[in-house]
Image (tube, rainbow, N blue to C red):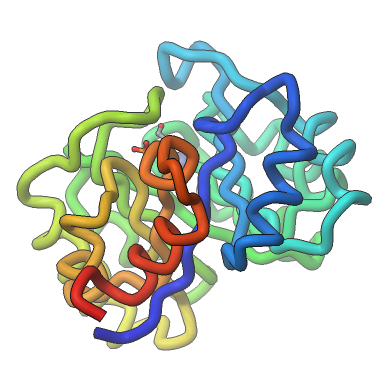
Length: 220
Ligand code: DX5
Ligand code: ZN
């Protein structure tokens, strides 16, 4: 199987020691840090905002992948870019002016991504593909870590990868939710380039081993 990037989600880390968790992810060789921002409106949960990211920024040069699960993200995307995220994704379902929000992120010199919920048809991303650096395919309904990977997500990852190959060959396909050692190889084979993992990394007794297995496939 091809090598994928592993993006541990600090949603599953210790909120009283986020800096230590980020440093730990760098130490074990994780590729990106996935930062789940929730507003209690778009999703029924609350996490943290841009101050968290700007406070974490000086302690590590890791790639910060901010996943905004917030209503009307256009109001805040610029502040997330300024906080030090290298990539800012928001949800198709949460924003009326998708082009406008993508343009703000890009103009600020940041990479941009568009996320789609499990019940949103994959082809809604088509009009935006030429602008996207990343397509974020949710394999659970956003809001909480530790949920089960939804059946049928592999097919959606394949669809996203096909659209990417045709219209946005430089964009990455990221998969988020319910990834574990048992399904990571199939997710990569379906076309994922970046795999988000919360519980599978932070819940593991050996986090480095968990990242290595997710990246290389169980049998390697
Ligand atoms: C869900 C978040 C995910 C979540 C993944 O709303 O966007 O990033 O933290 O956690 P696991 O890997 O435990 O499903
Ligand atoms: Zn996420």
